[in-house]
Length: 75
Image 1 (spheres, rainbow, N blue to C red):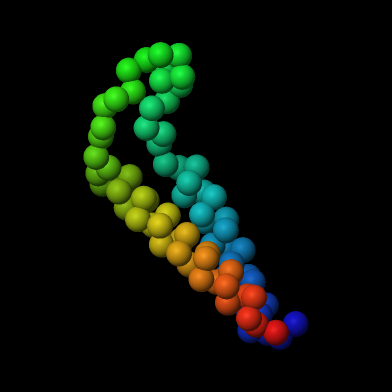
Image 2: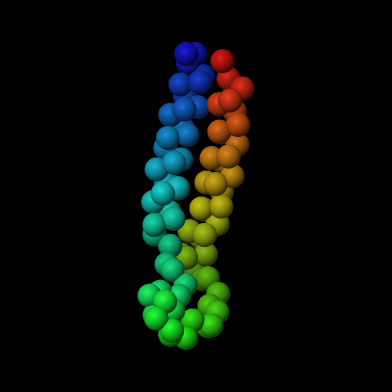
């Protein structure tokens, strides 16, 4: 395996770990109360850290997809 492919795979693994962490840190909208018939129709806008984490997760997903495609074409 070439050194460039090793670097891309390592970066991909780091992005994978960051993506899992960022998804787990986000709050769920409805919670368990909506499962048992509670009111879950309230919409709240993301603010502050939650909004930044949301955008960070989107960037990580795009990077994950792009690097996954790059790995396919590296020899």
